[in-house]
Image (tube, rainbow, N blue to C red; front, side, top):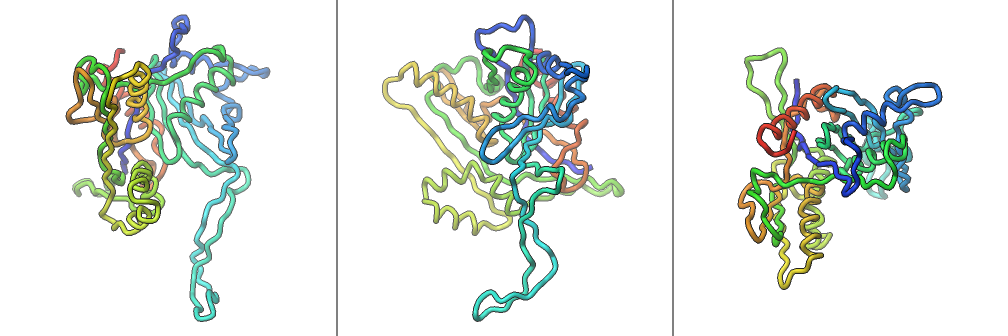
Length: 348
């Protein structure tokens, strides 16, 4: 079965000083999905009521589509959909058109179309697993960790009133204890390094088990820009938009961009800057899959990723698919949880 690698992100559920009487993120999600309506139907069985409107100009919504109680965890699939949207389609039927006074050319028609009636285009996916106060997730395309947080916040507060709306609802990224030995003290230096490289797909031929696994690199234009999204702003700031765009456009099929960025705070430190740097170091986990390194007063990460996360393989329903096998994702996220617990990176 074809396989693709994705980064598995980790967050710890945090309500600040508010105590929830023994409730965890997992139990809150389970309780919210068990809320019944006037017809005595639980939210598990009401897909339409699991649709969250982001109320933005693009008309985006987030749907908790597939969702399952695994007894030891709650696992779900989030879809970022857009109702007011167009998709470009190339009709592979040649026609001849007059493009200028000098040019008569044969072309394929390029049109934009809306989604068929009763459907919406999916612009991003996320698969998440809540175990206790631990959240594991993977995200694709335009889905973000903030969308995941906003959806779960809406699910337990607005949609079902499982907890009061005044309760803080945060997800805290954590430093990897195997990379950060003890407390590093005040963070003085943040560094993001790594390659904005394309994901690779591993396809295992089903009918020819004796053949080696085949590695394929996906290189469509859309995917290239998506994978470079964190590198492009830095390059534009350095080179200007025109030069940056010309560099990106000239990249060959085997080329990719590598970006290194470093931020230092010098001079006399304030409490506000200390707190903010620690927050930013955590938030970097949301912004990039590249390596995040930190240098503190009492220690540093010299090599490796400071953020607690890991890359894992996931099965595809078919070669080239943008979807993942639901059951396989559930198994793999639980495997990451078990590894982190066994390695002492998180508590059970």
